[in-house]
Length: 498
Image 1 (cartoon, rainbow, N blue to C red):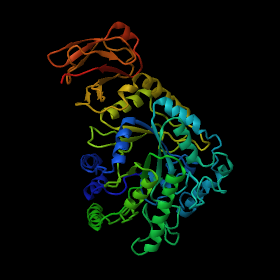
Image 2 (cartoon, rainbow, N blue to C red; image 1 turned 180 degrees about the horizontal axis):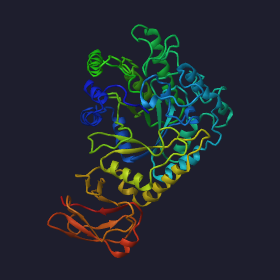
Image 3 (cartoon, one colour; image 1 turned 60 degrees about the horizontal axis):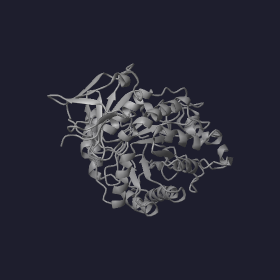
Image 4 (cartoon, helix red, strand yellow; image 1 turned 120 degrees about the vertical axis):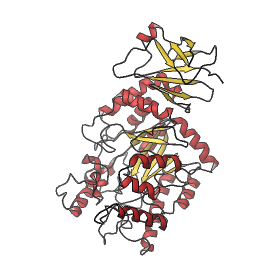
């Protein structure tokens, strides 16, 4: 993943660097979206917003060390860049050599994408986003533009019949009816046209001046375009291109100057942990090319303000309110983004309440699961997905193809509505609460006189009564003692007062 990359606004960068992140995010969420104009993409975005629940997978050679993906290669003084593995983590260049040699031992022989796809489908997930390449540059697909890839003879797994991991994952998940998305890192810390070995890497950015070395930079732009076009040409129907590394983008000089002005003013010794560099990757031209291959493709140029960020991606957090544009919270299910030995996963209650909260606010949940170096998911991941699946079997009609309804949440009750005018109330049970209350009171909305209310999973019409403010649902003892699911109970109201 990206750890606060290219600035959205110089003000936001300043706020982030002074750790006033909440205010920065609020500004970003309120103001930083450019609507799409392509009719095919608009239609696809509307469909995507109805899917609600997807799977993200971070997987690469780094899983063998159980470390945060790629970031230990970055010579920046942040916690996520710490070098904790290898024989000589104190020597950067020795460490980088050893890290990249992980290619020669990566052999996930227990890789079974069909098993993963079935588990995701049974959990109610509707799309997958897979890391075809992270910032370290190691390709989990058969790119002809590098040997630093899963199908290289340097990689033991290359002799496996399913060596082209990305292709196998996309095929398996499509086979279960899920949409497919390719995560792709715009920076590549392995290729010489981005980190030229003549110069030491300085930070996450390109390690030379693109202005002074235009031929070298153009070679990198071409390399990046070619790899993305491979994914959009040779890997079947693609629904989403999910681009990470938002600092690789065209940045106006005024924005760069403002960033340095404010950043320098906030450091006492003039030392900068990293820079901002104009890195024009020619994104508009790339999007035109990929949509020739994949008409209607959703493009998510993460953290880069502009028309190529078709939806926004709050990272490992849920916004406080509804947002006026398409969005998706990408969330770690257990451990870290990448494989963590003995990871502790969120509980079924935590996961289901998070999904309901996100959907009630109009967003999608992209839940990350990180495969092991052997090519397996941990048991905790399967157990969490089983909890989702059991709950979604009963309640999915209140999740898919729904939209927020004001005020979206009242106390512990979330709300959604569908296109037919039905409204769904999710009663979020507290820890240990396994019995439905005898009465549930809602003050913010009113059912139409005579309308039916049912708990999803039950065919029994429930009695309800209007109050001076709102209404109450009366729950019979049979449903109180034997609810239709765990953690969150959903009530369907056929129609509200107009």
